[in-house]
Length: 391
Image (tube, rainbow, N blue to C red; front, side):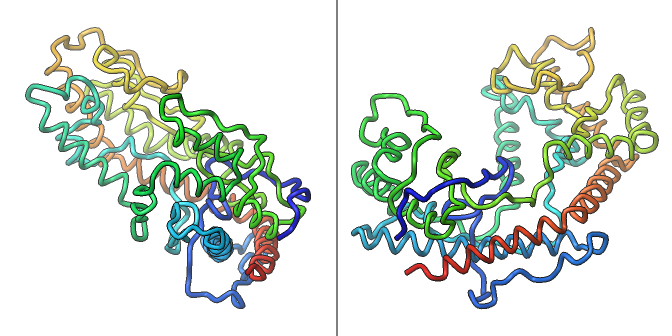
């Protein structure tokens, strides 16, 4: 494999984006390497199909990732490893998108059924839920919320049990061969010394071992190891245009608020006011309402510190002066507000109107980046040509 001295510049992917490569969003498909070329689906910007662009991009990524992980696995087996950390070498399954990915954060609209039973659910993560009449209901809410959070996951769950059955010394030896001893010691050194705190991994560490070899062979002079680490992930590849940029998200929030504020938004806030909950307004930077922060910060701080860390600029009204002091009444007050909130949403159609405005913005945003997608897909194609040559 090529010399690691050639590793140079590459752009780090956005923290909210999918990553290309050994530890990124990778997968497998029925398309053979000879067919894994970028489809001509970008066309003119006005006619570009955002969903087709996203699907083609991720299809190429998953093909590339599968080749990279296959090469890394073979490299590790050549070093004598027969059991692997599958999270780092197993290709993942990707299901084709049928809509633009939803990162709009509209979960502040609970369903009528859930709101009438649990409110917004904030109380279920406080000390209130630990005892008394609320314990069973809190457990039910947490279970339902967990199922909801996991419902978008696709593919079979990864079985990494064999690796975790290895001794800590053997696990560390695997990581040392995968990324090199210095990087492994910084990231996984706790496997050898469980008495100390987990060390922070320096972003200056260079990945050697099998991962570094594959990165260099695929990306060559485009490879960059100065930004190797992000959590447990190796980040490398090319600048990825898939996700809406931070600046564009602020514009999107304002556009969504503008689209709904004089109709569905105004009707929703009027409905809340008539139900006894005045003073609400949008956080127009992100087109968000924050009833969860309202209860966590304004109502329950004496009962939990779970919610520490909300954005200090989160927008919500002052707590009312006549807020009940009895804990049981507090929970009932949240459930009552949640029920009113869901009813007002059903009556005004605010959630649907916001979702429509979000998707309209994103469609136009992606159509304006058709050329970038085409360039990125060409870069992926070149990387795949190199990856196909790996033994």
